[in-house]
Image (cartoon, rainbow, N blue to C red; front, side, top):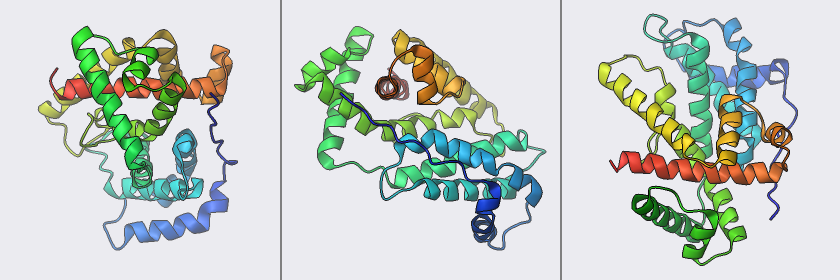
Length: 267
């Protein structure tokens, strides 16, 4: 099976986007409180917006565009500047990253609807995987899951690719069906003991889930999320094709979503 991955267009400079970003900045402020962070400092973090968008470019589907995500990320940056409180939160770079990423994920979520038949198939695969995992203590192999769904392994990989955007959003931000990885990174206005406990539990469960992935899937997750490599770079490191990296990434996200769903359900 051939899986195509979309490449991000050349990174635009801050100067190229200055007029557009200033307009979005004015809209974002909209008469609200004065930002603690200066305009000059905000400009310094515009490249971070492009970097985050480039990592999410695989999930872009028409009519959503690269520029749409950059625009959403810029608004997230401005709002981070508005809301930042240095006496309560982490350094601005960390806080801005979380707000930018959250804004981009929100924009992706708005355009991530799948056809009803595909959604039904994903729900069925999720239910089968949960039941299998609860019974055996491990997730089904590709072949086992494909057999239970009565589809080919190639069709199964297509399903993982279709589900990837939803799982990407669910793992990295909040949703009604999945626990939130993003919550473990977010810097809230207050740091209550119960919030710390919840975040620590999530990190612990996510670590356990990653360790239970097969070796290739675990390598892709670590290189992509911890080492911050692109899929093309991962392909070079692992000496496999970029489409294969995409498949492994999609499958890993599906497996992680199952594990986090189990944790949320208390199993």
